[in-house]
Amino acid sequence: MSDTFTIAVIGAGGKMGTRVSNNLVKTEHTVHYVENSPAGRQRTLDAGRELTDGPDAVADADIVVFAVPDLALQAVTGELVPLMKDGAIALTLDPAAAYAGLLAKRPEVTQAVAHPCHPSIFLQRTTPEEYADTFGGIAAPQDAIAAIESDDPAKAQIVEATVRAIYAPVVDVHWVTVKQLAQLEPTLVETIACMVGALLKESLDEAVNTMGVPEAAARSILLGHTQVALANGLRGDNPFSDACLIAMDYGREAIIKDDWKKVFRDDELDGNLARMLHLDRIER
Image: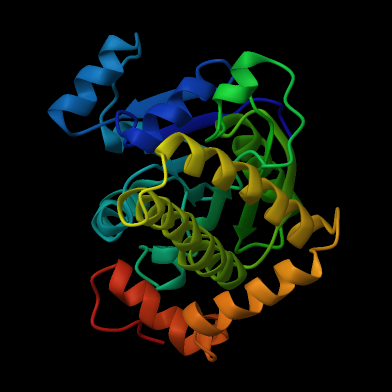
């Protein structure tokens, strides 16, 4: 397999597309940048990149990166996948539409999905740039998750090389199925982890606005104890104290529903994704 290939970025001037393009421009790959919105086109031009029309960009691309929102993927892949060359790869950056069966398909085009893990809270950072890069794709190393509907190792190599380029710097690329990626994102990381993060912010507001605790004091103790809680809970760094365990039990009884683990069921995943994609239901 060649070390370089041709990549088309669809939505190159959007939030995802700009991050992807910022990294691809540093590589030796041939990259075509596609953007339809006036604001996105201007951002792409302002970054010093040439714009290419979608049909021309995908015609000779080895891999097409669809960096567009989930709600637009059905229409965009419907327009461009039929124009892709035989043997090419269509790479989306979120599993929802792929799992829901909304993407246009052709037997001659391989579907793949990838998503960044974002830099770990336990990452050893050594530079100001790494500390500042909480999202990933700039300076802080991160892992990525990928899925591909093909047994061809050459195609998997192209996907992995692209994933490592668009999310750089990347430590590991973990391979899963499309369904497993959907179970990770949204269920594990959005439905649960991001919800917990928002709950922590609401809790901070309650401590400050309802209980009257000075914000600096409340923020400091929350941020420090959040790190301790995650280190103890996820890595087993130190045991929680007996008193803390009692308080944790009270919190679980007062806040968490007994059947909360139902979010990991297939029917709940389908319902969650249907809401996210503004569908009545996921068709199987």
